[in-house]
Length: 343
Image (tube, rainbow, N blue to C red; front, side, top):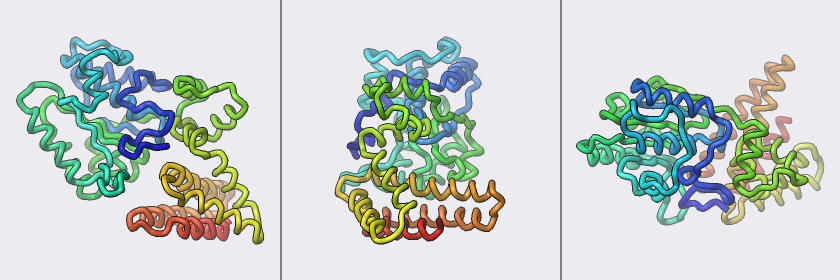
């Protein structure tokens, strides 16, 4: 299961510890060469779906810079991090004085990650730059992901981006760049990563010990959509069963469907079900968006607009449920009812 304090899925390797990256050679080459030129941008917006390697790329690039602090003397490609080097050991342990990883903080009362990256977390960046200002070393901040910044935190980051300290680098990760403040996007150089192709997915999953030749392999690869994290949810968290139950509910009618809905809601609202609930939330909203696109392609603009509005309503209700700790089972049942009505 997900370790809330580490945010790492069962079966995954934490990005700071991962010495391998698959499927993003062009992005790696761009980062290495722009750094070596001495003309690299101070803030890079690494865009792409969740679970395709954005954080691993960010730590990989940070490792490269901290091992080669003079750009002109750096290699023109990113090599695999040396697990025995001091820089790598410091990054893995979180003890590096030259890198700050900003992510959602842990609520000490619940042991779960909070719903957003708060302004208090961003203030750590100010202290970080203050403590290292006289060292002459590179100072790197990874914001993971920037989608989780609340409004105050986003504005605080913006102020730093507007006047970046010398020899500083911001690696701003985002699953949905459209949700970020336009002013943050405008101060970053966009670097778009694509979902992994089948070959890269097989390599990544094989590294994690998954049998890519097994009976369910093709099914999982197809359902994962080029995301390793989605594949792990399908493999280790019952995601395939959840997806199948969801499809049966959408197709079914009558009292038996109501029983299926309650059974699914019970599973998704059980203790320690955060990861699979997030998986279901993405499945649900993704289905509405897909249906909206299909309606638009078929020329049914009215239905497409109605479904597009519904996807926004679903996202808002899910966020409110999380923020106010509402009864998750009732939220799920309500959302399924609304989706079936819309269908």
